[in-house]
Image 1 (cartoon, rainbow, N blue to C red):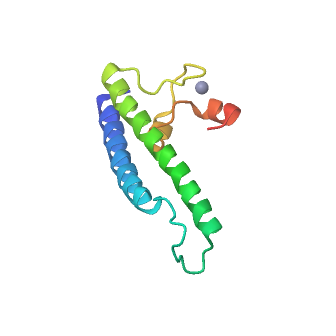
Image 2 (cartoon, protein in one colour):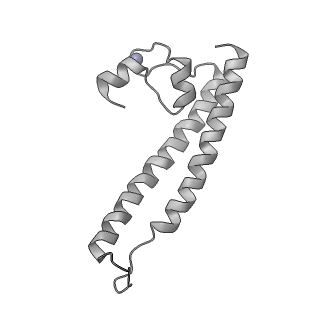
Length: 114
Ligand SMILES: [Zn+2]
């Protein structure tokens, strides 16, 4: 990767982390436990609990993506960023830019899912 590409990737990772962090804040707001006797409009309590569980899952994904992105920044500094964890080949630059938390190349993503 050229220094220009590395700078682009860092900027894209930092942008993505900022997006995810604001997403986490709003998820935390809405994923608070459902109070038993709270009136939730047309939603039943079961619906509210289902939505809450979905948001908790999204929250967990968002948090793990933040960790992957932090790891990505570290690897950029180390010079080992962009290596596929399965085949050890280089992940394409465009893919890294679009999906910097990805740790597998497009071929392995198709093969193993992800
Ligand atoms: Zn691969």
